[in-house]
Image 1 (cartoon, rainbow, N blue to C red):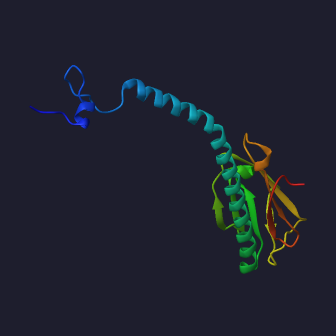
Image 2 (cartoon, rainbow, N blue to C red):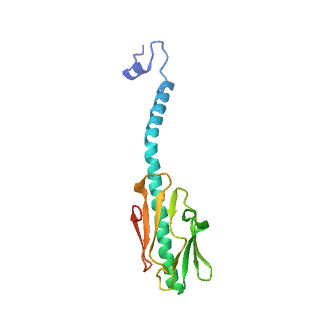
Image 3 (cartoon, rainbow, N blue to C red):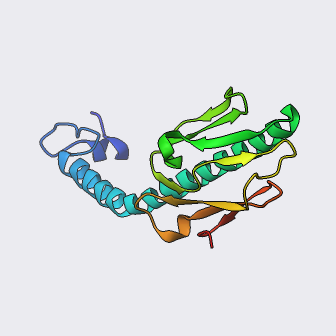
Length: 166
């Protein structure tokens, strides 16, 4: 005669069949429904994070390209111009020297609106050929806290800051 152990006793149903291990379809559906609700609540927050990072990335890339353009102007002892692609900074930009040779090119930024002058030109001393200027970056459809501003003084030095340009 076999006396079932306590563990065996828990796994045997009164009908004599062993209980199958795993989740029932009801439990699985409930877990999926709860997960869907949590993702739905978190999604708007993720969108703002993505927009914020897109503006930060565009700001950093533009800032570093302006520094590179200024450096190239000094190194080559010639004027170097940063021009928005197709007249729109959000489409990217091209850095060219006085002979028209492309020094560097930047692709577009999909989720960022960028407003600035028609072109930025550095002379052989690294200074702006026109007065000081600024470039405004903002999230396309995002909130105002994502705004960034890059100001370039007459000496040609760019400075990035949070917030809108004044």
